[in-house]
Length: 146
Image (cartoon, rainbow, N blue to C red):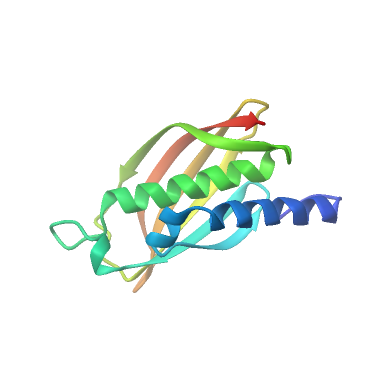
C-alpha cells in the first residue's frame, strides 16, 4: 500500500510505472500484465502459454526470470524520484520447483531504497491450480536520471 501524504505524487508514480510497463513489448509477448502497484512493491501476473515451455513441459526459467526482473525494477521505480528511471545491475534467481501451473504471479519488493542503488527481492508464484513458490530473486537496480 502506498504510504504517501501527496496523493497527486502517488498517482504520478503509478502512472509512470503503468506507462513504462506498457512500452515493454517483451512483457506483452509473454502475456504479462501489472496487477498491483504500491510503494516499494509491484505484482505482475501471467498465464501459461505453450510457446513459453521448455523441453520438459515446464514454464521456461527465462520467462520467470524476465517477469520477476520487471517486477523488481518497477518496485524500485516506485521509490525513485519522478525524473529517474531504473536499470538492472545484477540479479540471482534460485528455482525452487518446476513450474507446471496455468497461472503465475511475479512479486517485486524493495528491501532498501537508495540514492543510486535499490536492493530488491522477487518471487514467482504458481497461482493456479494451487499456490506454490516457484522461484526467488535477489536484485540490484540502478537509478538513472536524464
